[in-house]
Length: 174
Image 1: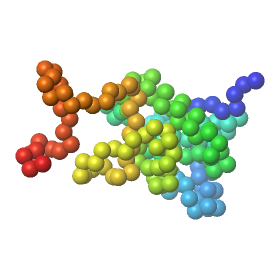
Image 2: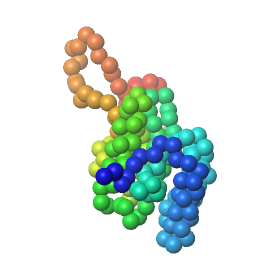
Image 3: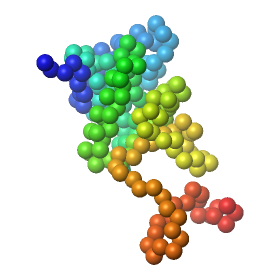
Image 4: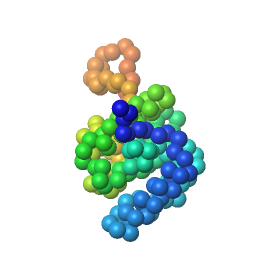
C-alpha cells in the first residue's frame, strides 16, 4: 500500500492553483491564513522555493523558503485546518528539515507568525534567536541542522573561539 502523504518539492501550476483556492476560501470563511501573502507565495513558487505536502495527490500543506549562504529562512508554513493536531505537521517539518540538511545547509531560521505557532516550533526543537538589541524580533527562532557542542568556559585553552553578543565598539561599555 502506498503512503497517503508525500513531500512534493516541485509542485505544478495545477497544485499552486489549488493552494490559492484553499487560501482564498480560508480567508473568506475564517478570516485567517496566508492569502494576504499570496504574492510572496507565488513568487516563491516561480523560484522553485515552494514545497507542498500532498495527501492522496492533493496539497494539504506547503512551506515557502529562501536560502541564505549557509542557512534557510522559512517564510511561511501552512497546513489545512483539518490536518492540524494529528502529527502530520511534525512529519512534514521533519522531512523538510532533512531535505535542507541534505542540501548542506547548517541551520533554519524563522519568524513565528501568528504568535500561536510559537508552541509548535518550540516542540519541533527550535530555539529563540538570541537577543542582540536590534534587528531580530522576539519571535525569531532557529534550529541547527548539524550536531552542535555546548559552549565552555576554559579561559586557559590555547585555541578558542569567543562569541560576543555586542558589536566591537560597544565592548568597553558592556
